[in-house]
Length: 252
Ligand code: 48F
Image 1 (cartoon, helix red, strand yellow):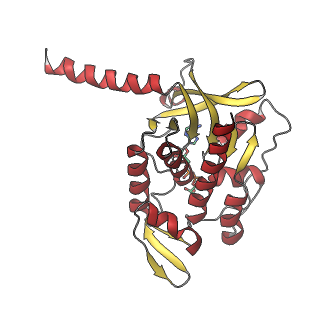
Image 2: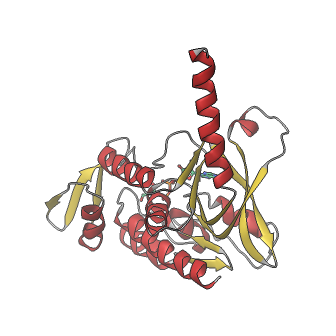
């Protein structure tokens, strides 16, 4: 068989096997920034069938740019154990730690890739699946479809729980709010490092049966300030989203 055909066949076979395996899962995580990557990694590591979608080709969300493109991130003592767990080296400077943004993104992506989670990059959630008044999955499409201004119908993934980790826009919650007027998106508040970082964890919750919101999306929904380039709260929020999602999966 011609090598050209074999290469194409292998890619198609492998991808479609993964895609078919992704159609009915325990958890769908929308967004591969720090909170979503960590939540998805923890769920998959525990053996839950997990799919992570990201609109972009490269995972990592806002990690890469550190602060103002300076690829260094900071965090506080309360999240140090997570950085250690995923193998990110850090240095203590006063009451803060510093680490490489590239190393954090790399470590999270590597851990997720090896955890058994299915990763669908270049694919975005354009809506939710709502059944029996519970969020039961997402409607997905290629990210290139809206960019090319094409009208192409999507496909669906069903799940026991969906995590909105889409960052500042809280896109999944917005799709729910189109149907449920009681869901109000307050919009993220002006920057306040301390209040924002703690708020991310506090605001991480099951906002509707089957839908957990975490990371910057949690602050966006609750009207809490943004926290700027400090990333400990994001990982703690991902951890809380994982705990809530796990309980939902177990009780479903
Ligand atoms: O914004 P993002 O990094 O999310 P996060 O986990 O972390 C926020 C921090 O990076 C930073 C901060 C400082 O701590 O505030 O901003 O809350 O990543 C969100 C990811 O979601 C993807 C997007 O491409 C990005 O990688 N995304 C957004 N909307 C969709 C989506 C969608 N509808 N479908 C799929 N992916």
